[in-house]
Image 1: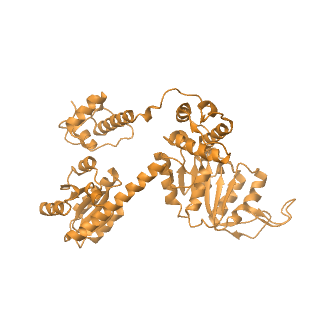
Image 2: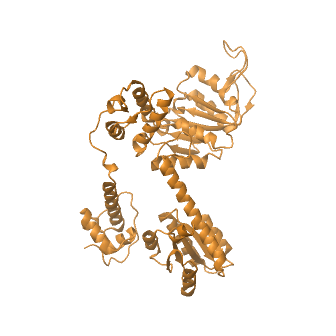
Image 3: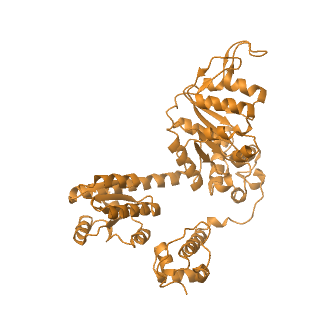
Length: 479
């Protein structure tokens, strides 16, 4: 652990020079950068990418300084959200410490300085950072998500998984939006599994698969004699999910007459069976999904807006497979192994042309289409490997460019330079500051990527999605 700590970067923000030197001595075994809090702090954060920041927020009797410090803390975390911040304050500034933790600081420390105690606090924060990195590396090696049945390494799906993990422990009604075949039911089951209702039933109903005339009795149940063939009282799906989770798939297909009744159930948590008059109390968590654009349906009168607001307390958008960079191949390999075992077939690999085809194909049917194509290939393929032809796909011929790490790095570097110039409106000094590099290094990057800084000058419109920055001294702007 000591060896790992020597590689850790600590930024000390302290305006008192004597205390700053004392802190440098306390943490001499770390890679320390120490400075005053100033306008250059964010540039230092970008350049050094510290694992932790020891930040003196000031005293309780200096509200203006405290407010500036808290804003700087927020900006540091915005730039580097994984950095651990230890807020240091005077002993009488407990409210300031609480505010810092509320903004995202990992821990706090009250003066006067006790080197031993402060060292424990800082090293504990660094250990948390180290454990987070180990967990991230483990997930990268395994390609696994935290959710059952979800395979992938793309940032888009990781974001979805994090959202599922956050909302699962609550009772919030969740709406899953995404194309057909993206795995919305798998996510709904994870919402149930990670909730306090996991030991109770999970009841899934496909609103598009049940005829309109039967859907009401399926959902709400019916009393004996309510209609021809109703020989006995029967509980509906909502009742059978008591204490658990109800998943209404394809809710955009629900007829308007049932939408009003479902709204009443969601609002009052009671249901009246078909042919009944006595309300039955219900306790369930509702999760809905659709591939339809509900906002457009509301505009055309096909879906009730009041029901939409009730079922979408939290909305999670599930990306199509084409937007999940790198996931299609990982999923294909996983499904190939699973289906080979299921069908008792020898486990085959993917031929180079199959790999190229899988990565190049747009997958309009998403994961469901991928599984169907691989299932057919496992059954029908005769060779030792699955080819593009076995999958019914065309070989694009060339390797995807993003497999070339050098090309990917160059593109990302060029994009970062262009973005910084757009935000800085052509001011080279400010662009270099945003990138965390020196101005000569920025000149080298401009030449390397053939970028003309003049086209980003102050009279050029800002790039789409880039924030306007307040005017600063234009000394050193790109002329």
